[in-house]
Figure 1: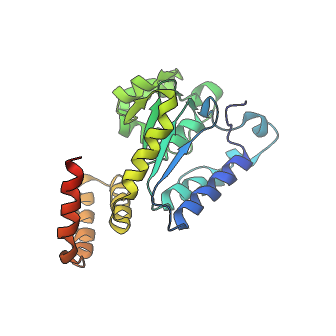
Figure 2 (figure 1 turned 135 degrees about the vertical axis):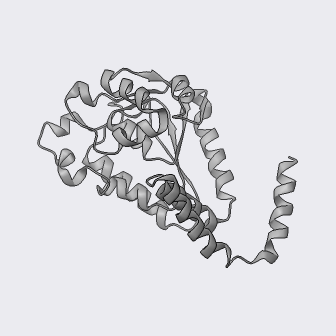
Length: 235
């Protein structure tokens, strides 16, 4: 009813859930979505007004427990944005590996309107995804934008009818889960680590990790894997 505000209990539960995903060998990929008409509208202002520590320095920045849970999770996390993703909720969406959105989804960064600074990565991630000028417009104005605009700008990968969103997100999660786990998790890591580096440094890192890993691969099993891929491409 309150659009899934991020209070202390909700964040603690989210951290616990992601840590469970990280350590459960039966889980290869996860989908994060909201219940009701919102993904989340961000930090719970009612709790904040009581002196909650949500805005304390140890709950902001890349070392904050919530962001560390995402960063340390080796499994892909797909964000299924089912409604409002606003301010801290927008930042939470950006912590996912990629996003699908419902047609009714709406995004906004209202930090400037409420008098706060983003502390969970939005000011750095958003410009890298949509371009600096678009990100400035979004954050300076605080205006809402639609799922269709988010897709046009490269923020979300696909938009689905509201009643089809979760099924589509789970379907891609199942497809991802059919990949070889060790290689999948290492590819996620090399992409995420490289995103924070200059291109040349990232290429060097990729080459070093690939050389170390690929030299240990059992080539004899690749023929069967390639046959499976060919069969899949014909279906």
